Image 1 (cartoon, rainbow, N blue to C red):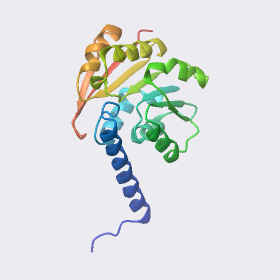
Image 2 (cartoon, rainbow, N blue to C red):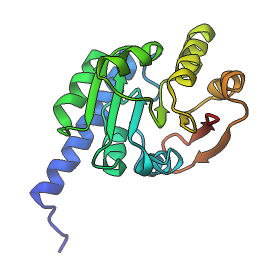
Image 3 (cartoon, one colour):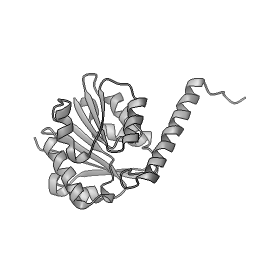
Length: 203
């Protein structure tokens, strides 16, 4: 006889399906702001946590939390005294993150990645140890991408890491002017497979 899923498992499956649907609908509505048609896989989330050294961070900035799957993975690894500032430009996704994740370490902020320093100042947060970005650099104007990268370099703590996961290499091309050559790898266990780049700020 097949195992009968527990109510908790059923709720979790329903929640994941709802998040995936919400993510897909936002992609259809704002394809230039939402970087993929589906949320990140658990394999990608674990890779981002590892590459970003989130377990050793005190302040983390996430650009483009989407429905909050990666946000939850970051919070799971983040130290108890850490803070996570999740910056999302889409107001519906911000509200989704706020309603689904109850964690005092999380600040879900509606705003632009071009204004990270202002958001950090608004919440009296120190320079981040890591910035993790899923926003699609390939669909934004080059000057906007450069402005965001300049902002990231400016706010990162010395020795801090910038981690970007993208389908295309625009962020790597632009990032070399601000951070030099990145380390990179590909996460095959994601739909679709996705490239992960990492830079470290000298310090």
